[in-house]
Length: 198
View 1 (cartoon, rainbow, N blue to C red):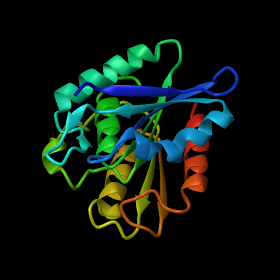
View 2: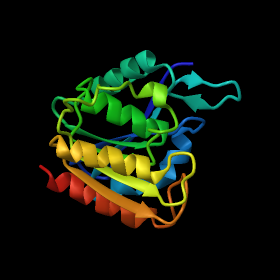
View 3: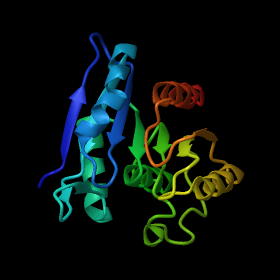
């Protein structure tokens, strides 16, 4: 299956671009209602689909080489050199954005990482590669009752990145591994902060 990218445009000229990556076993359609409303605020929203299919038919990001190739192709399609791109990723999609942007594999204006799969996939997180991260601003959103990706692990990463010169913001909600009912407010707070970083 080939990777996909659906681009949602605002009614007028777009002023910002957000590339949205679903979680493992997720789909772009799951992400649509969480981000489509941003088009009313001048965002161009790009809903990515990994193209990698698991045994149950869901999408995943586990082949990191294929993932990196897909992201680079999407950035070319979005003309990222002329229109800098912000990233939003849920779970494994959050991990993909952190890994790629902090290592400089692809340029990002800022990252919204929602319950990123850091502790859930330790083999995806080689020791040492965050030794000199690119200082891309990162807004983290964690669920206080998330058992799949415990929030303390994400907080420790955020603290480490902050010490290394990466601007970070930590937001949380009372739920688990999900976009909570407070999502619209959290999304606005995170994206406003990311844009304020310059």
